[in-house]
Length: 85
Image (cartoon, rainbow, N blue to C red; front, top):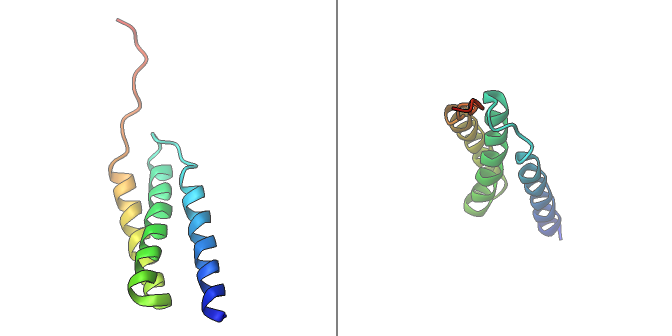
């Protein structure tokens, strides 16, 4: 029974992280890093939980969050100019 409640809690946390990941400004480097970190942490925790249980979920969340933040910040697009020719 304890394993079921642990899985439900993990699923709830992942759902919250993924829901919050969409709350970013696509042209702001900090917002992209934050959104990338949330998406990466959620994905990393899911993969880590499948591969190694609770400890693997924590390691996966940390690694995924760090990678997601770096990639999000590095891939921030330039704001388009609105000049007409």
